[in-house]
Image 1 (cartoon, one colour):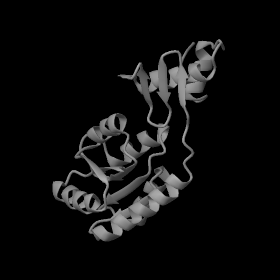
Image 2: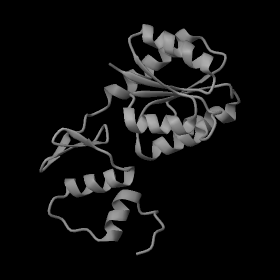
Image 3: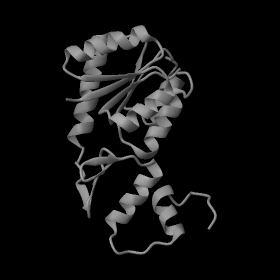
Image 4: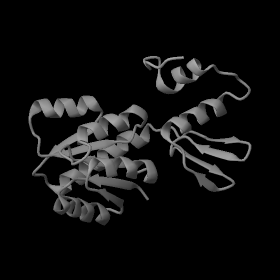
Length: 189
């Protein structure tokens, strides 16, 4: 079942969107602030995110920016900010669509289906890496040892996958930082 995370600090909007999407057969996860949204994405791996911009704790802009740093999860921004500049910024940050409030829930459902069609049609599933007794699911960013889940930070996961994809290769600390953080990382040796 396709999982959708709906993030909005207005509980009434979340309930309306949830009701319409559940009728369409989607599993709905909810969050009411940006921090909870990021935690839910990390733990539940939703297939799509419907995201308000004006959120407590962590803004929708920052949620989008954080997710785009290491994820291709489709994002539909659902917000009262209807200025053209806001729409451009949202799309340039990595949103796949931008819907302004007030909105028609049926239109939102149609846009969601269109985004899912575009993003899932081109998605090539990555293989699950098997190393000794570890199973590393690249899409879900999940590591299991003998079927039991292992909690890793994003950095730990990236380091593990880099090493698992290059068995027998020795890396310097700087090479690992380049692979995991990118060449723009400003760390010291």
